[in-house]
Structures are given as C-alpha cells and as structure tokens.
Image (cartoon, rainbow over all chains, first blue to last red; front, side, top):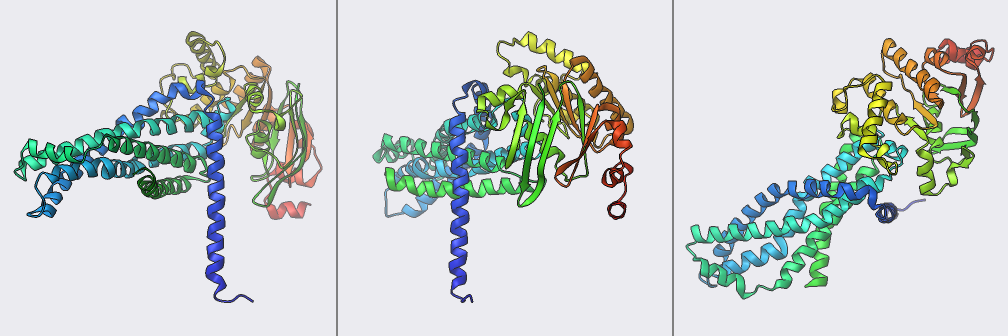
Length: 260
Length: 250
C-alpha cells in the first residue's frame, strides 16, 4: 500500500532517473561527435559557411541588443550614483558590466533563440524527412557533416560576436553619457580605466565561447533526436532554446565562481 | 554476390515488427517486397544498409556481414548500394545538381569535371536534363523521385533499394517510374529490391515477389505464381479484401 509521503519521493526519483538517462544520451552524442571530428575532409569545407551563418549573420541582433543595453546602463548608473558617487563612475559601470556580464550573457541568450532554434529546426526537419538517412546511404557521417562544423563555428564565432557587442555597448554608453548626462569624453574614459583589467576581456570571451559550444551542441542534439513529424520539430526547437538558456545561466554562475 | 537476410528480428517499443525474416535477393534480379502497411517492409530495407539494426539475425551483402562491419567498411559498402527514399529525401538547401553530386564528392580523385559529366549523364537517364539549377521545392512529387533515383545511381552502385517509389503518384507517373526501374535493371545490371504497395507495379517490374505478413515472409515466388497462389492470406492481399473478409477467407 502506498503512503501519501511516497508520492513526492517517487516523483523525485522518476525525475532523477529521466534526467540521468537524458544526460547519458547527450554524453553519448557528444562522444560520437568528438570521434567524428577526425573526419576533417567532411566538415572542413562546411566550416566557413557555418561560421558566416552562425556568426556574421548574428551580428545585427547582437549589436541591436548591445546598443540599447549600453544606453540603459549609462542612464541607470547616473540615476544610481546621483550625488553620492562621482559621475565618471558611469564609465566604470558601463564597461565593467558590459564586458563581464551583459555582453556575453545577453548575446548568448539572444543567440540561443536565433542560432539554437535554427539548428534544431533544420536538423530536426532533416531527420523527419529522412535526409539524415540519405546522408548515411551516401557514405557521409551525419555527425561529421552536420554537428561538428556547427559546434566548431559556434565555439569560434560567439566570442567574436560578443567582442563586437561589448564594444558597441560601451560606445552606446559613452555617447549616451555625452549627449544625455552632460559628461565629457575624458570623464567617461577615466571611469572606464580605473578598474579596467585586461583579464576581464579574456573572461568575457571564454564565457562567450562556452555559450557558443552549449547553444550549438544542444541545438544539434535536440534536432538529431527528433522523431515524428512537424510537431516533433517544433518540440525539439523549443527544448533546444529552453535548455540552452538554462545552461547559459548555470555556466555564467560557474565561470563567475571559478574564474573571478 | 547477393543480399542475404537470415532470421531478422526487430521490435519498436515492444511491438514486434519482424519476427524471423529470412530472404535471399539473387544477383541481377529485381525483387518486389509487398505487404500491408506496418508489416515492416521499409524496416527490412533499412536493415540491409544498417540504417536500422535488428535485435537478432544476420545481414549479408556481397558476403560481408553488414551488422559487424566497422564504420569505414560500412561506408565503403554503402557506396555500392543506392537507396531511393519514399519521399526522395532530397537535401532542401541544395540544387538538383548538388543533390546528385553529393555521393560523387565522396569518391576519391573525382574532379569537378568528372562529377559534372556524371551528374549530366544520370539526369539524362532519368529524363531530367535542364533541371540542374532547380531547388527541390520547385519540383513535383514525380520529379523529386526521379532526382532521388539519379542521386542513387550516380556512384554506379551494384544494388538499388527502392522504398515505395510510386506511392502518391498518378498512374502515368507511376508507369514512368516503373519504366525507369526496369531500365536501371536492364542498362546498369543492378540487383534491386523494391518495397511497394502497388501490385500492378510489382507485377510489371519484378522477377520475384516476396510478401511480408505477421513479421515473416509469407510468400516468395514469381508474379505468375503469386497470382495463382491458393494461400488465403496472399489471395486476400492480391484481391484487396478488407480485414474482415480476409479473416473470413482464412
């Protein structure tokens, strides 16, 4: 006979088991993809195309977000510091926050939607229309052809996109402080330089690279494991975006705890 | 040189689909694989090139044990087998030319000129010259199947596997595809397995017909033999009787 108190225990157990099974499947997928990365002949010629698609094509949305983030940071810093802290600390806050946190994280989250969803939908559609089976019959390793170039492109290009986003965000903050806060350029630059550490940039790019790896790997995994029809493709796409966003936030905390 | 399937078992989520199928496809013949929907015809076809792995049994192609081949050897074998998918499975983002050239790009030392010439030759064989620059979305169902066939024959395979090549096509396009299948067998000398629901097609194109029923091969013989069969299950399928009448016939 089951007692009421066993229900949450059973539910927790079921969740733990399904999570462990999903993690095991994802680990197997990653291990096979690493093995397939030896097939350079297959992914080598697709890599540049994917770098353009995942990186260059993502710049407009990343820069749009960065511009408005820089503006808001500048205005909120000024609002917060009024009277108590010298105005030039606006430059400190804009630069530090853009580089350490908002540049990589907001870009990562935006690209989880754009890139992760795109990859999951594309590969998921290929799965349900037997295009992945067709690759197999044409003697292509689908992991080498579809997964490896996307994951490599994401890992390499996310830091570049984030570097642009950081720069544009800071420039937007600077222009805002000149035009709306009545600050001068030397003041803003002074604030920026007080606490600037070149390591911050390194930290920002490491984070961005890990986000690129996460978003593309999860997009590929959910696309690859799609089964069924159009509804299943939609489900995989949603799962890829949700999982990528959650892992980005967990990784963000992880890097802050380990690298700072 | 043939395809040999021995005691193949396959189940999906506990539902047994193949329960000990044994079948030999002889060199140079065209064998039609028929049976009701869901009897595992496509599953059996996919096991031949290890797109699906059975739980039990042995698959042999050219005397090679397909299920135990290492990855590179499996890809070498797959280059010998052309596969025509039910809905063509053309790569959406590629032109017709690139779709047909896809397998050729895996052939060592094949120059772009060689690839171009071979693609043109394959498109001519399936009567689709002039479509090189089109995208799959710009083709009709019958045209897509022809391009799928051109892609399958591009690497000059010894075997051709067709998964329902005429499903969803009108009778005239069906007849055209049937003619193409016959031409491939006659001109290229390939050994073919054709999964189909269409009995008229099966009679027209095949040397032998195998019927799958209840996870096993229920009938194996020539088109004349299946039409003369006295097996009530085979008769019910050949005559297209609904389930209740099939049971009555048994």
